[in-house]
Image 1 (cartoon, rainbow, N blue to C red):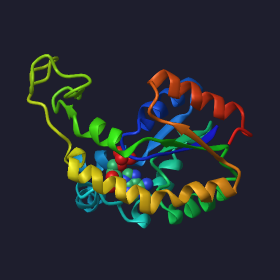
Image 2: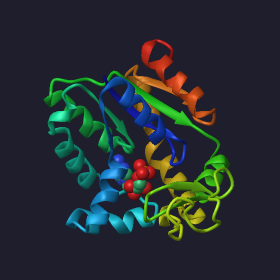
Image 3: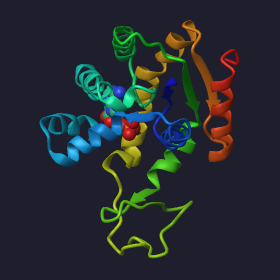
Image 4: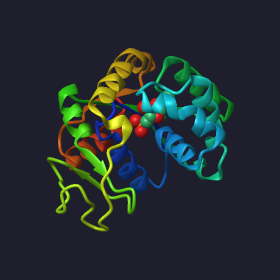
Length: 218
Ligand code: AMP
């Protein structure tokens, strides 16, 4: 199974990607996760990427394409992979086609998750995480029992720089401008399935399974 997940930030596609990858025994590759890890480790890639990420902008295509090409070479991609957050531009989508052609592979499906932008702003701007144990809370939907401290380990909770409201609005703008052209790109190739990302996690997961089983239901 080789699948791409597309969607605005905060639509819940990362959660869905994790579930689907586990259920089908394929690896989930999130370029956002790879970049955040590079930033954390302070590698040259991380240093270069951080300013773009903090500003809610896209990291340059050549950087992410090179990163993905390298990641695909690992042995765990043999059985298939689920790309979460890549491609995000037409240039990246074309590069992915070339990379996959070189490997004798084709995409099975592209799942696009949709959501009302205001729902996304509310979801993301309330997100807080614990720098100690990694637990994630939401100020309104899943608050910590200890206000601004982690209920599990007591560390002060933090807000990701790119979850600040102004940055979220910038990320949504970037999504509309740079990534939504991919919908037509993949629709033209007969690969696109669009689903509503605002339903419950289980309902969205069911929708995902359904479109993966029924390639004609675009
Ligand atoms: P994500 O966790 O997927 O929302 O990614 C977080 C940030 O990483 C994005 O706002 C971008 O700055 C950067 N990023 C992740 N994937 C890509 C990509 N495919 N192209 C460009 N930038 C990316």
